[in-house]
Amino acid sequence: MSDKLPSHVVTPGAGPAYDHGDKFKVEKLDFFYGGFNALTDISVSIKRHAVTAFIGPSGCGKSTFLRCLNRMNDLIPGTRVEGRITLDDHDVYGSGVDPVDLRRRVGMIFQQPNPFPMSIYDNVAYGPKLHGVRKKSELDAIVEESLKRANVWKEVKDILSRGGLTLSGGQQQRLCIARVLAVEPEVLLMDEPCSAIDPTSVQKIEDLMAELKDRITIVIVTHNMQQAARVSDYTAFFLQEVAGEPAHLVEYDRTASLFTTPKDRRTEDYITGRFG
Amino acid sequence: MQSRERMNKRATNAVALTVIWMAAIATVAALGTILVYVFVNGIGQITPSFIFTWPHGVNMEGGIWPTIQATVYVTGLSMLITTPIAVLAAVYLAEYAVQGRLVSTIRFAADSLASVPSIVMGLFGLAAFVEGMGMRLSVLAAALALSFLLLPIIVRTTEEAIRAVPKYIRWGSYGLGASKWQTVSRIVLPSAMPRITTGVILAAGRAMGETAVVIYTMGTMINGPVSPLDPGRTMPVHLMLMAQEGINMPGAYGTALLLVLLVLGFNLTARYIGRRNRRMQG
Picture 1 (cartoon, each protein chain N blue to C red):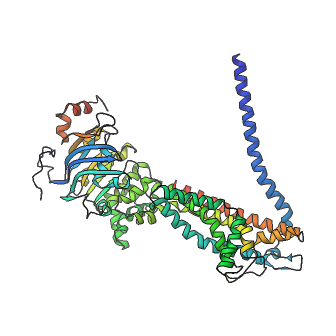
Picture 2 (cartoon, one colour):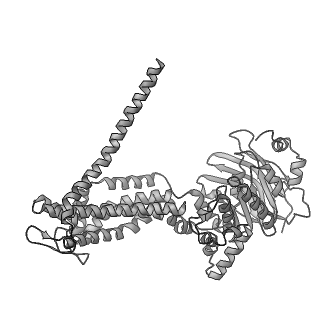
Picture 3 (cartoon, rainbow over the protein chains, first blue to last red):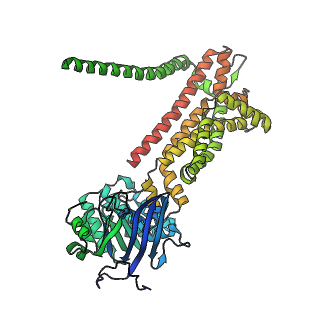
């Protein structure tokens, strides 16, 4: 299915180990908050079954861009997208696309862990129930499997009926990951998932990302360059160069190349800590 | 020079603190005085037979059971009518309506409705339900008139409860592919439920003590209403009539104490629900 990409789409140097084709293709994306042009001319392809990291200083639009991928920005009044995003070659903003269905396929983890005020079990079972799973045995299996994949099963298996909000922040975040995994998404978008939690949980989340990418495409926004270097296969560097002007994509490459031999001076300045 | 300044600061601080303290004490004292006054005058009346028997004779001796029955009946019926409408209206206002002039107009109308003097609401109930719709003096007419009084209160408390549910919890639900209605009904409303319940209970307490509305819409007959179309006399109305004619002051105080205890019970329940929930989520 993968057509030849238009020349303006930045394609990272593809290596045999990671390249399973493109999951998302973004072409000439512009994003507006009301009259403010927040992102401009973003063209990028996101590889299937790989971890892609978006890095850049605060306010560079990387989270905004992430939310374009599952149309979460639709929930913010006054926002507008121009350009084209395809998921498996289907237009994400196409007329026939139900954003509700899209968000099931493209799950999302937020910076702030956000368990629902219900039991651990019900948190994980919420998604499958929404999509029609009724049988108790089936739900039990999904809950266990999802909590295991999210690296939190051992800690919660005996307290499944306890409120999700009684867990520690890091456990809550992994519970939220389990909750998303329970609906079998194809893509997992993570918006600074580790910035508000303890180091042990960060370690566990980084481990699970490595395990998950066999089945899932992962995109992570992070402030932490070491984390991007550790967990990702590809890295995109976003930058807003002048306040009030739109942010754009400066460089996109295999993580190893971007961090060792950046092609752009600004990327080099950023990763060596000269600004940001 | 410096020490005098410091002295002045200390003095102003002490004065301000005293004034604030006095205001706080005055508030608590007002409530305390009323409660003690009603309690001292009414407690001698409160016996099982006062609560559970009917009044008799021209001076309304004996018990007040039918007025308790009428009070609970009309309050219950009114809450039954009001709560679903108010909660759905609040869901619409908070979740669905495009925030703009229309919604602020609706909100302003609700606030205005809440501030209409209850005697006017009683008059309206008399014209609209008792006479206009031919319900006569009845529990149903009173419940409907009370609904007009309670609707804005419950709408506003529910709306605030819904708005207090954090945005990121909703996003969690949307992020799983939930529709708007699924998110509202399964996440937002359950999360807001303790606060909504608190608001509803407080409104019920308000309805229970309401006099002006019910006297015009369900009358003063001591009958222990059974059908919603029966008239009846609620506790506040009974209290008012006994005290106004001075025929049975002890009975009036006894009724007042029971009424205060009932409303207090409602308020404490509301508080308990609010607290218990905070503990569970915390």
